[in-house]
Length: 78
Image 1 (cartoon, one colour):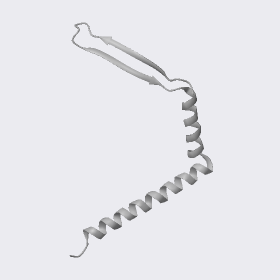
Image 2: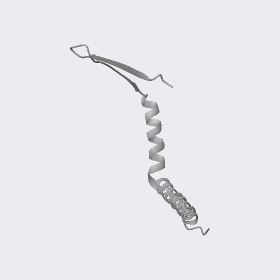
Image 3: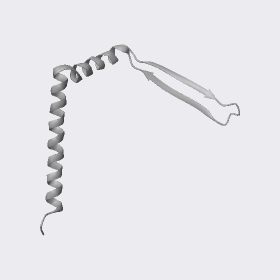
Image 4: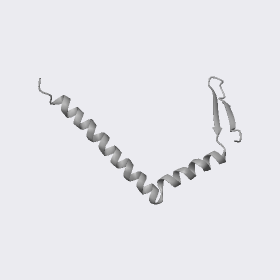
């Protein structure tokens, strides 16, 4: 892995009442391209469609179970 590049920017206003310092880090292009390859692999093509379908089914069941439990406790007879 390559070290991250960083920069510091210091700005001072004319009257000296406000000073500003901003720090920033830029990740290496190798790490960014690795993330891009993973996202392209998981979000496009047949695998991307399968991931979206599985995500939709999982979201449906989570909402269904939360709604069932909420309805059970709201309408529970005492």
